[in-house]
Image (cartoon, rainbow over all chains, first blue to last red; front, side, top):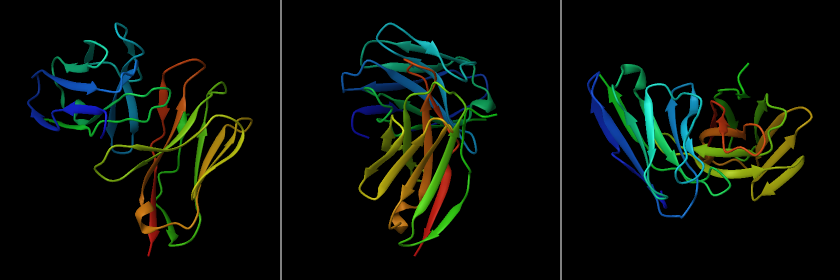
Length: 110
Length: 112
């Protein structure tokens, strides 16, 4: 999707491993978001950053950390992956609407 | 009670019919409301936003908002097989907040 780039697109981890999901936007937006999407659960907000230098917890922050590296980049880190974190992760960057989503990262934890 | 509720479906309608998708929300002070379409394996894409009571039309899509009843709906006229997707309702939490709460989505199937 134009404007929001997520890497990687797919990843398989073993329980206990760590990894960082990357998100970058080139739209000069202030706010950025991380969501996870599970079957039957819809999109759930993990963390968001209203502006560079600030981050706040969403609905399901446990087990995750984030870094707003600069205005463009917002990363999501799993320090010790658990099978319950198997999901599709979406990064989003709105101006005043949540309208720009990345293509998603499909993460499986064995 | 979930903060944003949608019937999971599937909602099946014949081609050319009107599809009606519904969403209720619990936070009385929510101010912004959105409908997203999500095709299988793809990311959500915004199709409608609405902020005040009443109807808002955009092409074949009409969003309807009733804040007193805490209800928002999406009508799709002249439904096409390409409209077959999951439709997600999203609501801002509270006032002056950047938090968006999504419903679980309604799967729509338009039968040719």
